Image (cartoon, rainbow over the protein chains, first blue to last red):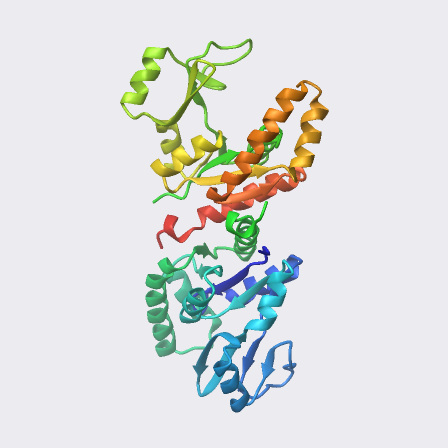
Length: 193
Length: 193
């Protein structure tokens, strides 16, 4: 068995997943971000195979039927999913793959691939999360209240995750996630002596 | 629940446990070596409470009866054991405690304290282990053959351990064990949000 690890990073909107994940793959070699397949149209500047694999609804449906996705979900009428092949190829080479998806997606993957490592990235507190969301200045009160409600529900599910990383500072969160990846690749179940 | 971790490091004689463990506690704050209780006589330079807690056979027997030891074993007519109180006090403060004991001791502790993290420190290969043992120049052929036989048996049990760290270089082994400690202190089961 190879010791490349598939790592899911989830957490409330505003927890800083995007920043932490970007910093992590910039800083450490051998860790890659998974590229999702989607039926939505490319936006300005988005590159096929880098940001997404852009596919038709028909193609997406056939990927589901052939079990070529390790998870998929629908948002606002578009489908998003994680192709299995690139993940398997990388982890077989001993490379690690990061996936930034929501909690439902994480739980879905863990059922299919029990070796997957689920990390819940949490803001230091719900108060701090509210401050960060308000600090953005882009969302109105109702949206923020809604996000906080979702976050509170996600906290309750976090116990199903393998690890909880508190994002007090980006650097510390990056180091902790990197440590988790190193540790997981030393798991007895992944190593043959 | 606190997130201090009790870590057992085991591995064949010649794997470099002593060097790695010493380097680890020198380099990182908040990680301490557990001090064993023993019935054997202090040797030149050994300090009570630093190298061992030196106790009488009567005292040791009463510690066993009162369940004050998390594991114990007999070697060459002397008893050795790990007092529970100092370990509990440190981990409750969020400090990590390292224990360098044999595989049987590790398995014994895990049954009593399932949160314990078991790390098997392995030499890169049995061939390399033989080279290291011969390189010491202190043991005869029979002793070395015996050690290698024990090591081969220990390898078979290593699968019961949580992690396997290959000690190709001391620095890498130290970093890997440190990563395991950081990761384990992020375990969802140890964190309350």
